[in-house]
Image 1 (cartoon, rainbow, N blue to C red):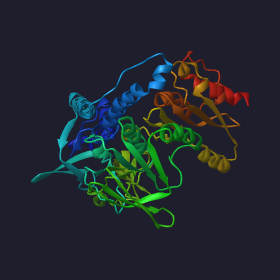
Image 2 (image 1 turned 30 degrees about the vertical axis):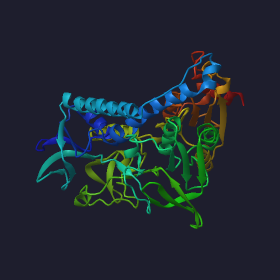
Image 3 (image 1 turned 180 degrees about the vertical axis):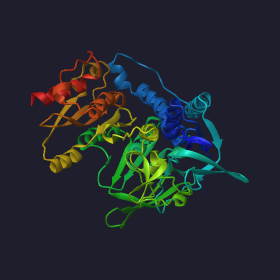
Image 4 (image 1 turned 60 degrees about the horizontal axis):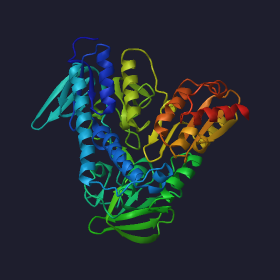
Length: 476
C-alpha cells in the first residue's frame, strides 16, 4: 500500500475481532501489527466464551450423569457421581491457555507484529504505544480500534471479586456457594445458573424487568423458562432490582421494586454474580485527537462499513470493530466486523449483514436465534407493507431427539407471507447452537420457505426440526 508508514494496518486490541482482522489483512499482503496491553485473545478467550463453555461442558456432564430418571429411560443405571471443583476449574484454565497460545502463534506464524502496551490514537494515522516508563509513536496507513468491553456494574453494587463478582471472576470457579444470587436473566445469567445448579448450588435469579429472558422471542422464552429455570433449584424475582449489594459473609442484597423504587426485601446469600451486561472499554483511546466523540452510551460511532464517524462524516483510514461500537456485542460479530473493515481498507466496499449473524446461549438444552423476533418482524412488516407468517415445529416429533430422550424443544420460523423470505429463526433444544447455522445461511441469502421446504435433510437428524417448520410454512 502507501509507502512512508511503519505499517499498512495497526490494530489496537488482540481479541477475537482484532485477531480475525489481522489474519484477513496478512492474507492480502498488508504489513500488520496488533497492539495489546492485556491478555492475548481478549474477553472471549480469557474471561468469556471459552472458559464459560468449558465450565458448561463439565457441569453439563455432571447434570446428565446425575439425572437418574433420564438415564433409566435409556436403560442405564449408575452409582453415585462425584466431581472436583478444582479439576473443573482447571479444565477451563487449560483450555484458555491452549486457545490463547494458538491465537498468539497464528499471528506470529503469519508475520503479524505483536506489540505489547496500551495503544491509543495520537492523531491521524498515528498510534501511541504506552508501556511502563516509555511511549513510542508508530504510523499506519489504516488503524482499527478493537478495545472490547468490560462487565457493567450498576450503581449501589460493590464488587470484591470473591463473594460479589462478575463473569470475569465467575469463570474461574473459585468456589461453589450453597446459595448464590444471579443479577440478570440474559445469556450470562442463564449460563451461570446452568453451571451452578448442575454442581449443586441453589440460585436466586433477580431480573429488573417484569419478564425473565427479556431479550428472547417470547415463544422460545416460555418453554426455555419452564425447562431451564422452573424445573431447577432456581427462585426467581422479576420486576425487582438490586438497589445495594454489600460483599461479605453473608452477602447482603437490598431489593427494590424496579418501577416504584420502593424497598421490597433484604436477601442474605453466600455469593452474588452480577450479570447485567457489558459496556464498551472506550476510555483513553485518543479519539479526541481525530475529532471523534463517543455516543451517549460511550460507544464509538461507526457505519456498516466499520468506518469511524465524526458527526456524520467518515474519519479517513480509521475503523472500530467489536463490542466498542455496540452494533452487536458478540465475539463472532466482532470477527465479522474485522473482516469487513479490512475489505473496505482494500477498497471493496463491503457492509455487515447483522440480521444473518446468529447468537446462542449454551445452556442445557441450548437457545439460539438468527434474524428478527416476531415483534420486530411485525414492526418491519407494518413499515414496509407486508404480512408476516410464523410456523413452529417441536423436538417431541423429531426421531433423533426422541432416540436421545431429549424432546424438550421448539423451532420457530418467521417469514414474509408474500415472498416467503425468512426473517428470523429461533430454536430451543439440544444442539440448538449448531442447528441455527442452516437458518443463518437462509437469512443471509434471503431464501424463501417456498424453496427451503424442498431441501432434503438426512433422517433421522435434529436438523429435521427446521425441515418440518419450513414444510409447515408452505402447507398453511
